[in-house]
Image 1 (cartoon, helix red, strand yellow):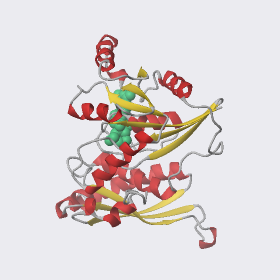
Image 2 (spheres, helix red, strand yellow):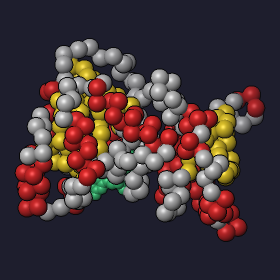
Image 3 (cartoon, helix red, strand yellow):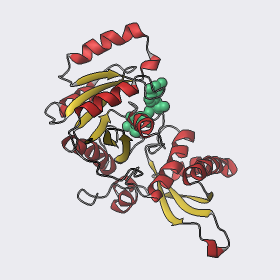
Length: 302
Ligand SMILES: Nc1nc2c(ncn2[C@@H]2O[C@H](COP(=O)(O)OP(=O)(O)OP(=O)(O)O)[C@@H](O)[C@H]2O)c(=O)[nH]1
Ligand SMILES: [Mg+2]
């Protein structure tokens, strides 16, 4: 038996969360076409006939301007020391820039085996891929360079085999049916936030958060057996963003609410009542209370 930890790190939008979801076969991490979607470390366990692998998805590494972003980047960087295999995920459709250089430097002295995962190969011609592989192979010494498409699954099986090969011998840490360490409340907030990211643009995705105020499990004795009641607040940082998130006659918040509820019902396998509010908190990205609520409390508290 093999057992080990694998973390995916890289620039925002590279496809780390898409890859985690594919590997564990469940949508644990929300995905969007906007950068900085993932804000916390998300753990997913996958069992193979000969191995148990703990995959960690992390926030994209970027230049942090707020306390929230400092914590996001720290969360990702901290995993470098904690894992057996580091998967550095790169978007092959993006020309490499300063940000990529920064990430490559971060992993240079890592004790873990570093895999360079070239993602989104479904978007480039094969002939374009070879020079990209060539260029990256000169950028560092990688244990493996694996081109994949997290979206289509192309070559992901090869990546998995290569990962398992590199893991140390060891017994499974988690029971067979264990999937993640995040509480249900976390997923509820993330599902709402995914819809908010999907339907809003510009600054709003970066400057908003979703806080779950109440999470009430279905209670048979209340006469509403099978109904999960969720009370959530969308926190924005400017007065002018509130009417945008609410929309004309409430049509935007309704849209977010309907889409979120559909997915919440699928995820929890129960009917969901979702109560959504919008609140302005100008400096929430610096506010320990909010950061704590979204899983980004001070170091050591995480
Ligand atoms: N075509 C294509 N799109 C992909 C692939 N992998 C991810 N994407 C898309 O790229 C965007 C970003 O994907 P995410 O998985 O959210 O990226 P991430 O690295 O987790 O981003 P952050 O959480 O912001 O750091 C989404 O629109 C995905 O659908 C891929 O292999 N092919
Ligand atoms: Mg992500």
